[in-house]
Image 1: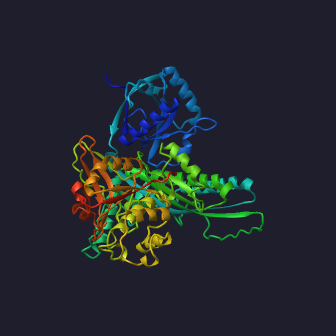
Image 2: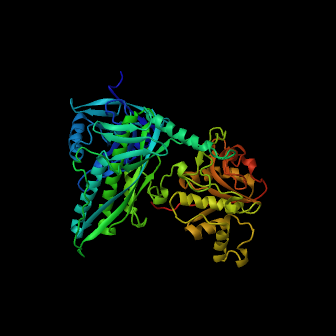
Image 3: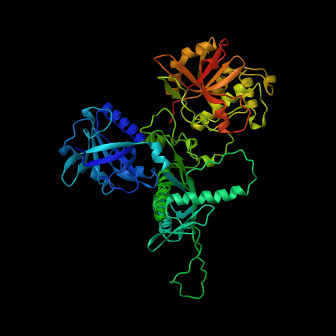
Length: 617
């Protein structure tokens, strides 16, 4: 007999459920999470659960949904509260829990799910997962279906809002700052709710606006969000036809469209009864005790929408997203005022493991990463992220592919076919790196610079992951570091002399304060015996490895190792490539590819530099 209720969750969300279960089993306490779904579907219908965000406990009790909601993209909605219990869940227990939870969440949530992890099983099922039905005060079994996150994301189109706003106010003392700030932001939010606001689709004539009946779409005939994407691509195609032919760059269609928030500069209204508009001048006396505040606010937020959504729903989604980010900016300013004073604010988007949506966070400018550590720790707790690696530092910000300005390709291994190892377990580099190779940066380092390029790839990994804001060093800067630590003579700078794994580890330590483990391999044939050790490195550290042997250096990005047979293949990034930044050529010609044991010089000795990840958030 089928369960009367059913919900569907993304496979990435199942991983979060498992983390919550481990948390409950560890401290033997009930934990709660906000379940987030797409759109405004009822919790008792076949809704898709996109994410689960843990509710940390405060002195007063559970923190509220409002505290976490500013980080979640518009276009999603609070679906329900999940209660994960270490003991048997009865109807009386559920009734009392809902009563207590409702005190915190009021009208924010009207559905509550219960997962009894004491009954065993690693995942929720209709045997241990139920919906509390308020009308009958009974627990109803609930089926759970699992959907692929890739399938879900392929159906989404991101509407990205850009806009320039400002708030201006005065305050006489710190005591009245908060009220003055709140009043100013209230005025701004009322403007954003008015019909004076429009959203212009970049490089088109399409305008999203509002009238007395709701959202409007003018400038083009569209019915769905998919039509919006096609409209922007048509405009881009027309621009490309005007460019010269022969460009080697491939055009990748990203499902992102840009809209700009604008205010109408003038409008005829029925309320204007006078034939003339008389200017007025307001004069205020200067008070030295009064502080004037003028803050520029730059919007940067996204609204994910299913491609089949109606276009008439877009204006309201855009408005809500803008209001949400402005409210987050207000909270950031208020929370940081006493410690840091008035600061300009910058919103960032972050993409973290196991979570399908981009997370929006506002940081005050000019405040160091060390001072913001407590904010990041709270975010790590909410999203069940490890506390030994950064995910919410400014340098961790998510950048859409079309916005990337650096001339280097990133994560060139993505999209490669499987290695072919039977019963193998793949262990890969974690995060993002840039591919550095011969002939880049207008430097001819062919035949001598491979280890320098591998080192640059390693440095780029630490930069992309937010461990450092230092730029990737040039060849001369690398050489100068080795001279400064007395590893090389002064005349080493500017030469074409090789470096090896030991020098790579020295530069990482001096430049980035990164320690490295060195593996000494007597011959290339012996690399096969290090499969288990290399797999452990990628699982625990996740950093790329520099390999130096004979006259060549390479970067190892992962291994596919079978513990049953000992078979292994290495994912190798080759810095000896001299061509253009063409991912198809790089992958098809084996410059980034799975390589077997015979790839290595069987008689040469090898030193492998395994950088260790610093412990920080």
